[in-house]
Image (cartoon, rainbow, N blue to C red; front, side, top):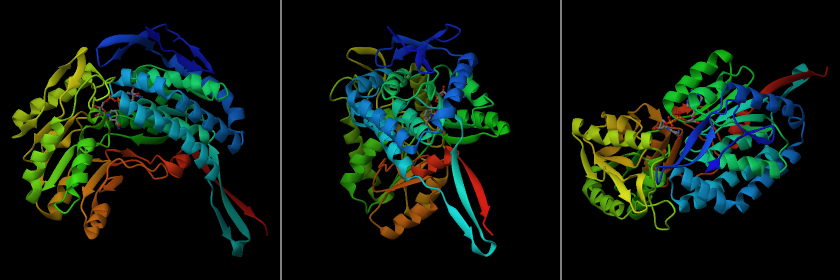
Length: 481
Ligand code: TXE
């Protein structure tokens, strides 16, 4: 049994109430350890440590901070195997995915922001006729809160923490209570890399208690949150009267629009990934597939054939494509959407069932699922399922495709498959999403703005956008007359 502890003021500590939550391996359903069920008392301790550390951390040079972040990145890389194994066990994702994507990206988050902060700049505006100059001082905000979800645990945890620290803030962070393990391991890495005590504090616990205490804390001045849209709305309501800066990365119901003039082979293999990578538990997955009518039947058959070949299996096995869903409640939620088919003139073309795999009989495994829908206005096309479930629907022409794509409350990302340049630019302009991929999916450049429109969130992460979020801009006007 593994005991996961809080990381406050540079040391591992137990929760003040001595209450613990169970940590479960989703591929077996077996409890592998325990984690703190922290309260507002623990959050207060974390805040105090952060506040004490801020006085000196905020005065460190960019070079010093950059060097420590780089060391953290190097140490993550050196512990790739252990971190990937921990992530895969905790989350249920294939070990190969954790090794190739999650952990390298966590290292890259630190490496990228160790460099980005050295290039971050501010503006100056001259008013020659009035003999004055304005310049913008970008100062760290102070103590900031970072709250992350379970689908890409270390990847998203570090995506917030790295820029917050780079910008000179001290952090009180909470990973998801469903996947706490790699955040726990990260703490030790930070200590080894020479991060001064109190600069990063990690408090484990439930969202409505520990997370809520972070959001409600009057002196935690900014909240960066990734998670469900409902939770995001609740956080916004709590934080608004306290006038906190807020960055919310929320759910998605992303369209994958396929035109007949696309590069068919590339589209087909990428669409399998954009549908089912990480068991479909990525906010960027293309869960609504719209296909031009002239190639609809061909696509449908080819797609089903490809998806049939995906192997659902133990995350640790080499040839596993689809691991376990993250938890029993989440599996139940995803399966409950399959029931919806009966009410919605929809047809399950493939999958739809929970499955049992060898050596993981009680694991939370499910078949990749393809559902044909007859309307975009159904629950299956309007609600975020966040599992290995996609819907298919044909369309005729650009106008209909665009209408279908935009007719949803979410606006995170969209993918368009076409070789028509005019059409790609038209769709890029008209799609109501924060991210548009043309002839690709999940191709990331960390310098670009990342975030959603409509109910998919507020604010942008990535590049200088997030460094602006994690700093307070102050205008200084000097008159030299
Ligand atoms: O996420 P929550 P849940 C979507 C997906 C999923 C649904 C619900 O559709 O089925 O959200 O998932 C913390 N104050 N996404 O319930 O609750 C919580 O402890 C402060 C999309 O698991 O939003 C965790 O650390 N914090 C998403 C984090 O919020 C609170 C990824 C996210 O959990 C809190 C995950 C509160 N009151 C789910 N309540 C994406 N955008 O990628 C909870 N938390």
